[in-house]
Image (cartoon, rainbow, N blue to C red; front, side, top):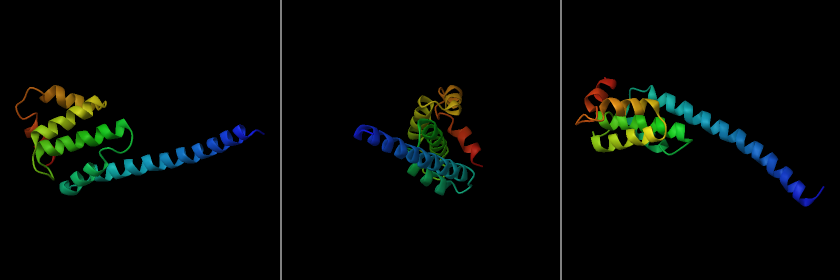
Length: 123
C-alpha cells in the first residue's frame, strides 16, 4: 500500500472519530438550549444564550439569536434594548428562523418592534 493510500486511510479513520464527536457536541448544545429555554431564570438564560450564540450550525445560531432578541425586546433577564433585540431577530430571520420571520412580519412596522408582545411571553 502506498504512503498516500495509508495517509488517506488514516484521514478517513480520524474523520469518522471527528464526526462522532461533532454529533455528541451538537446534542450537548441542543440539550443545553432546551434546558435554558425552559428555565424561568431569565438572567441565567440570557447569560447562557450570549455564551452560545455563535456555536453550532446556522440552524442552532438562528434559534439562539431569536431567543436573545426576544429577551432584549422584553428586558427579560437583561436591560431592555429594542434596537439590539430587533437586530438579533432580523439576524435570526436571515439565518432561516421561521419564528423570527413571522415575528418580523408581524411587528416590523411597530415602533417598539413588538416589545410589548415580547414582555407577555415572559410572564
